[in-house]
Length: 161
Length: 161
Image (cartoon, rainbow over all chains, first blue to last red):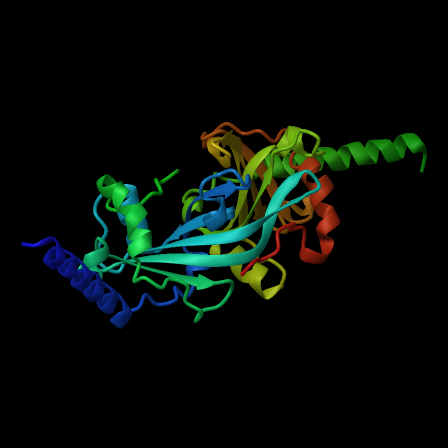
């Protein structure tokens, strides 16, 4: 196969991926604030490599299906959802407190719908909006990092009892 | 009434309070890690006035009864429980992450059992222990601060959607 043909195939595959994700967008995760809280982290120093994207305080939440799998170490069933909830980190009175929401990231397990991004659909919603979608590449950039976590099925977070 | 008699009454009252709390200790809140996460805060600067007691990253969790009341702004029914989960704050790679647990604080609503401390029973458990109790004064010192929050029924945390 020529290099050109290979590139066309890659482009077609990417197009298919984008179409699949676009045709089955990840829904806003209603009620996630009452889901189990997995862990938190604060990226407050501008020199952190992820500061531009993820600077602030973030919390990770899991719906019951995701929590069960996370705690058992097993693969995630379709329907498992994680939410990455990013808030501004406010430094005041010698403490870090939570500011306004920057966005929420959502990853939803569906092996068939999101096969091209490792069986997870990725989406993000700006601020407190339930409709303003941020991800524009069908989740390819999200998957670009998450695929490094293959041993834990694409999930970065570990359960902390 | 003489000053001595008044002091005796205060001492008796304190003794009664202590006895009431001691006779009905606040149980370890099994399963709280899957309760709703209310809010978080990181006290990482040693100059903070609460650093000695509460330095680290803390998360507040609410059981369903506490969550319902918190979200509605109503008073808390008996059985409502909040957990204050304090972890060490680790500074590494230009971010704050969660370290080992320092203790969990628990406040449980029971107007009758804990009438002398504002209708909340206070307890704390060291580290990951479910049996090593930390509060030695029947919750008097906890109540000493929490009573300032009378408008919100003794609760510091506000619900953040």
